[in-house]
Image 1 (cartoon, one colour):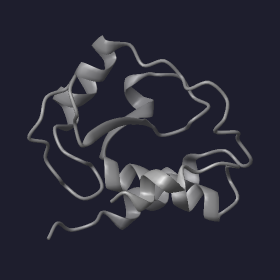
Image 2 (tube, helix red, strand yellow; image 1 turned 30 degrees about the vertical axis):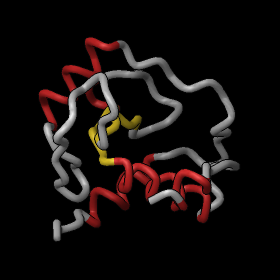
Image 3 (tube, helix red, strand yellow; image 1 turned 30 degrees about the horizontal axis):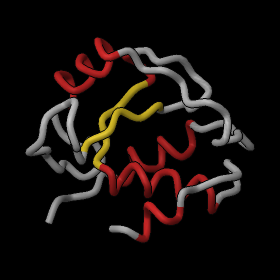
Length: 109
């Protein structure tokens, strides 16, 4: 069992602006930037999970915007596993910071 970085989880939830709309088009993350974040982080920064897949294929690791309204820059991106990524979005929904969460993706765990 991996140890959860609760402080980072709290930071990711706190960093999101109040009342943003997840139905807005996602911010584009250029492949070169994704690769840079993968090489920098290598693991899920919340739970430490590693990926056995590849960057392009069906990876369990996702590049996530720290501030969803912010730009796709090195300082605003972090690598999270699919479980921690959905946890962040569910917390944002529960705290009414966003109006949409894909519950079906959460249930498929």
